Length: 136
Image (cartoon, rainbow, N blue to C red; front, side, top):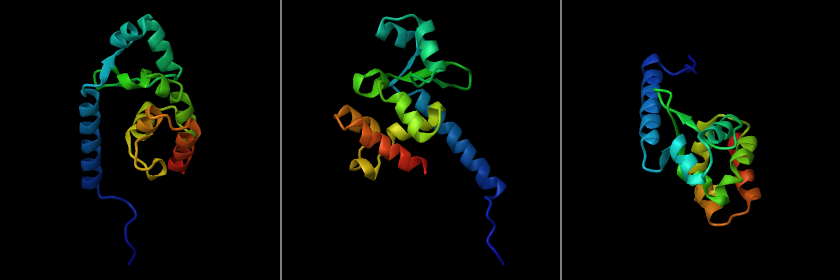
């Protein structure tokens, strides 16, 4: 008899509930700002921020109510220039996988998160190599 390759319905439902709870909590974290707050921080119009989100230049995450929230740290110069490059290396334009990659420690960067590595001056090429490895 072979092992079933698929998760049981109850396991799948539990994983979906856990993911939904994680996303809700992450959107409420102290480092998350609104489009209006980002515009004020960067001294640009909110429409400029919206254009950047739509163009995948920055990470904008929609909550269940459709409100966009953004990690404030992405506007640090060491991270700002890497957002689109990281998405490309991961093979996605979706914001959640990019955020998860940037916030998850990786052995390829001595246990640092890619975000922390960038903030500490690690070469973007090392971070992109870690993203390519992560995508495969």
